[in-house]
Image (cartoon, rainbow, N blue to C red; front, side):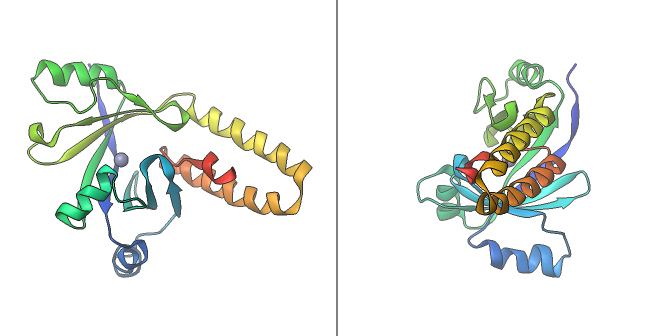
Length: 188
Ligand code: ZN
């Protein structure tokens, strides 16, 4: 039987990251680990670790993504809860057996090989729920990318080195987060 391991993150849609940080970081006191442009999600995301999980402030960068439409329709607010599971396929079949409406019948594969699927709010009493299974090879894949980048840096010099430092920092933070972050987009 599949197990729910922890809340991985809670995503909050905001109009403006800096303004949102005046509450979440400055007033409340959460630490901001980093801010990332995530082109896959057409959004900028600020990551604020809270124990083993994270608050993610999400600001859409286009007008027509799901998150952008959500913001236009309902204003800023909680967008979804992400639960980490040890076996996402097993979790999905269990949900199907319970007649739960799924947005993704099969998991989508994200950066680093992680598997993600969303459950429809109609079945969850109004909350969009994301399921997330970490690829066991994800940490190695990330490390490999970092090494490849370091090699490139040696041949390209200073400017690339500065970019790489940012990359490695993001990588380290991403490791802590265990998720997402389309790091390689930054290096193109
Ligand atoms: Zn999420």
